[in-house]
Image (tube, rainbow, N blue to C red; front, side, top):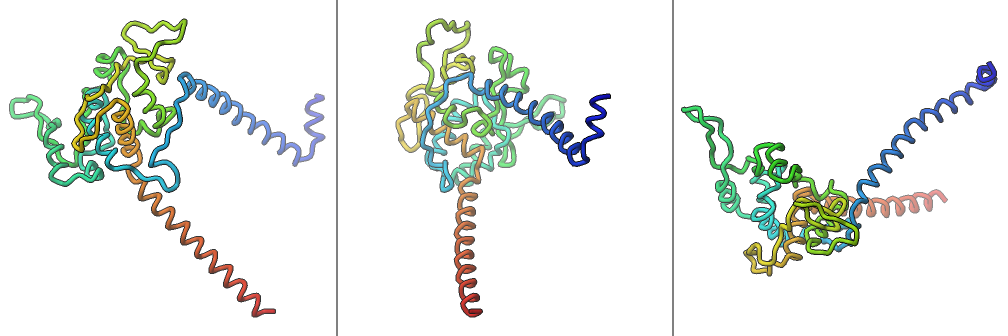
Length: 273
């Protein structure tokens, strides 16, 4: 009765404010709790050192030589376990490859083509419209071959992975370190400070000289890691350079328009006076 009397004594404005406050608390409190949980999950690895990347910033652009080398690393190393379902063979033309080279890369792979006359699974050479093949037929097979954890698809890894490109590069070069005192690395796992909880089921994927770069660049672990990270960033944002170019053009146009507007305003007011 006392609470009802208080509510009846409030003005309609006060009651609306109270209802809005309750509604806002219902929205904000769960999001804060969820954000805290997400932040805790994202911090269960060592913070990677921030690096300079050519594609960062409003004027960023991709080093296409590095992107091409990164594709070499992906094709010869990463593709054995990781798929890239959002990329087609035709998209590789964006690397600066010639049409004949893209067709040759696609034709070297075979994709499912239904069944033949005898009812057996058939395949055909891939074309430029086909997506890059996954190394496993499904997620269950992928998990079974990798200690129960399916390797993630790398199409958007550079933008959705906690820590982004800095962490990918740090992770690839973070093997071989000594675990901190008190940490026991489980059998079948490897210590890597940039992995979640410092342990990963993925063996060190990169080795000095593990790939051969067509341009003759020495294929050290650090070079391979930087190149494949740049390639993953390009895959996740292939039109970044064009967007930046359009953005700069728009800003320049608006600045010119602002200057002309100021000049016109001054001229108009000077004529009035």
